[in-house]
Image 1 (cartoon, rainbow, N blue to C red):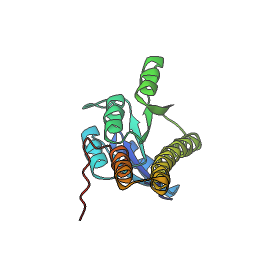
Image 2 (cartoon, one colour; image 1 turned 45 degrees about the vertical axis):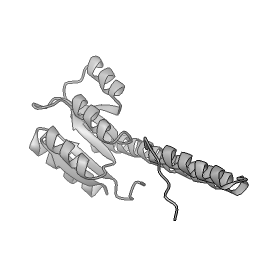
Image 3 (cartoon, one colour; image 1 turned 180 degrees about the vertical axis):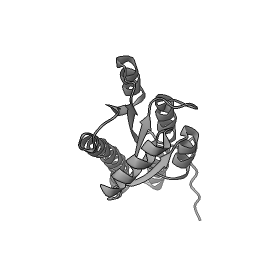
Length: 178
C-alpha cells in the first residue's frame, strides 16, 4: 500500500472543458489523472481502484463536492481530498475541512498555486500509508517476540490468534492444525 511515483488523481468537475484542461495540465506535471463530470461515476471508479487524491468541484448538479468527498472517504479513509470552487464561502470551507478536505481552493487558480497544494496533500497520503505499514510491522514484531519467549504451545496459538484478530480486523479467528 504505497503511493506509486505516478500519483493517481481523480478530478471531478461538472464543467467538462475545465475538467479536461485540469487533467491534461496535471498529466504534463507527471500525475496520472482520471476525470469525471459525474460524482457518481467518480465514486464507482474509487470502488474499483486505489486512488491517491480526489480533486473535486464544490457545486455540481447530482452531488456537491463535500458529499462526494464524504462518500469517497467512506470507501477509502486514507484518501486525500481537495475541494475547489468558484463560489467560496467561509461556511463551505469550514464544512469541507470538517468532512476531511485537506484544502479548499478558489477558482480560477494558477498552476503555480495548485502544485504545492497537491504535493502537500500527497505527502499526507504517503504518511498515512506509511503509518499503516508501520502498525502492521509492529504487530508482526510483537507476535514474533511473543512466540520467541512463549513457554507452551497453547500460549503461542493464543498469540497467533490475537495477532490475526487485530491485524485482520476479524470478528472470529480459527486455527486449523494438521
